[in-house]
Length: 197
Image 1 (cartoon, rainbow, N blue to C red):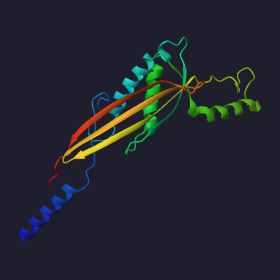
Image 2 (image 1 turned 120 degrees about the vertical axis):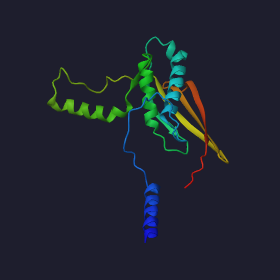
Image 3 (image 1 turned 60 degrees about the vertical axis):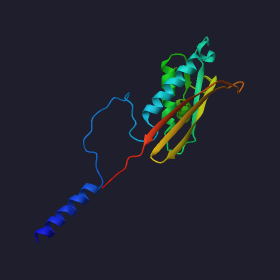
Image 4 (image 1 turned 90 degrees about the vertical axis):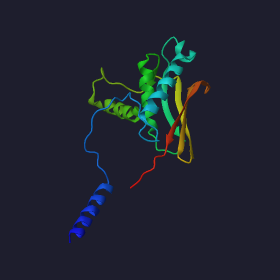
């Protein structure tokens, strides 16, 4: 009887230890601290890539030597990796960092429908003539900023490397010539850990 109870307790303990774990206690962490918890694209990768590419862009003559800050429209960053990566978040960070440099101004492509709706509302008779805005006053973009993300994953035995390359292009809207292009490369190494019972 005692043996059966001990066996039952041992099985129960084993089952509870092997079940799904819940993260129940947390704390704030420094977002600037390196994050390599797993082999996926991380915020550290994004921060490093954005920092280097922004520094390259603002030092290029198209921006550095401009008499007035050029107006840029951000389009898309294509994801050619095997991972799901929030490329919109990367482009948002690029835009913010470029804007904070004071060397570039941006057009909000995402707000176009909202702006059009607001024009319609303001011209509906509900807004005073002195304060209403209308079509024809927007600023045209000088450049389009877009790019692509690529990755190569290699695994041999317990070793794994993940290589990323993020390429950005600044295209002159009038001539369609690429006036600046650069890429950021990074490779991360991982070792597979044996998981025992």
